[in-house]
Length: 139
Image (cartoon, rainbow, N blue to C red; front, top):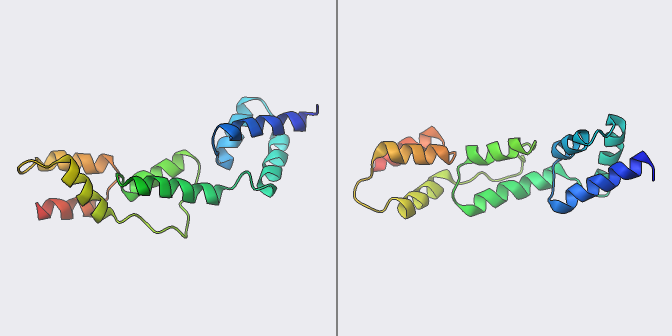
């Protein structure tokens, strides 16, 4: 088996576990001491075979977190960056106001909750400051 075939097989094993971005795959192959020119060739082949598609993966990751209804845009963008993906240009951003209101109604149902606690909760979930201010203003 050639070095290219070994690198290609290793890449397929990584992709069998979960979909990876190009950056994640490159990093994993580098950890296995695969030479850079082999990594380039393997990545090119996988892209041609449509087994490695960053745009498709970025849309899927964004939509996954958006569907959960628990996170703001900044949180989702941070998750994309950690996976070495960019925000898809064709994605419709999360309606942060609706998500935040729904989250708070489920989480804080008692009498007048502490504003600092609400603020921290929303910040940790990636909601923008303007959304947090608007929600606190309504309370």
